[in-house]
Amino acid sequence: MVLNATGRYAKATFAYVAAKLIANASPESLSRLWLLFEKVSSHPADKVQARRFRWLVEQDHPFGRWLKRVSTELNPKSRESLIQNLYGNAWFLSRSARRRFQRTHGFAPPYLVVFDVTARCNLRCEGCWAGMYGRNEDLPYQLLDRAITEAKHEMGVHFFVFSGGEPTLRKDLYDLYRAHADSHFQIYTNGTLIDAEMAAQFADCGNVMPMLSVEGDAVLTDNRRGSGVHDLVMSAMDDLRREGVLFGFSVTAVKSNVDVIMSDEFVERLIERGCLYGGYFQYIPIGRNPNLDLMVTAEQREVMRVRRNDTGWGRQCSRARSRIAASTEWGAAQHRRSGALNQLCGLRPTV
Image (cartoon, rainbow, N blue to C red; front, top):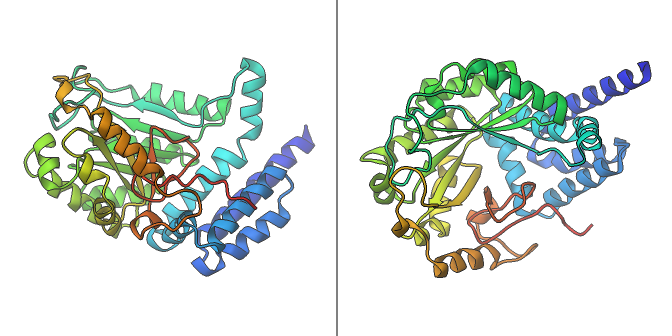
């Protein structure tokens, strides 16, 4: 019992120190740090993971370039939280809880849990999947807090996704983020309520990653979300970038925007705004005023699939594809893509 407790303490201390070193390392020293962690790690999986990250940095792989962006563009608290929570807590320190859950229940626990924290929203977007639900309900704070605590202790989950409605309408969530500083929170938001003050709050928490919704250019975004929304979202991104907050974009593919959102120019523009992540989804006709005419066609889905795969692992990526991590419903949860929809960069180099 004492030995187990000592081992857990040693692991937690190692993860904390490692996160601090990685988070505050210069881009030039990242490779040496990963080599060090590879040498001192005792678990074979940790050695493999450290070797992968070192390979990515040394080969100037898109994900390695993304790591360098993290080390230069985020504030220290956001960098440390990202490394500590997603690499340390969610992966390195959660193994015993995850194995215990699997032995007890016969299946592996999830790596993340999604909560619709509110049905309230300040917009009325065309085709919103949540628009059919009540407009005033919130998931009670106590229930949310308890569910997160149980997910951490019983399943080893330290990554939570908040959707809605519009999560930024809930001011009590700042207390939740701080109460669970050992976890990372990705919030899907329309971005219209994020101003300099809210960006500073996110920076102070360090463990909140907003994903701001856009539909393409200003015309496409305003047509679906309302006049002036695009400019508000761009302003929110500027505020988040100034504070060094980790943030990204979320885009829904519909028939009218596929060509725009699949272009490198679109991704490049959001990179320049400071986005480090991107999420692509396809419109499904449910919720508020479902409209089959908004759905992408079979031909457009094929274009999206080809664009995703038109450059394989290890091939030269364009500038836009080399500096952003993105995910789609086609990619596995552990995969991080390097740009527009056409390049999926799974972390599996041959070394």
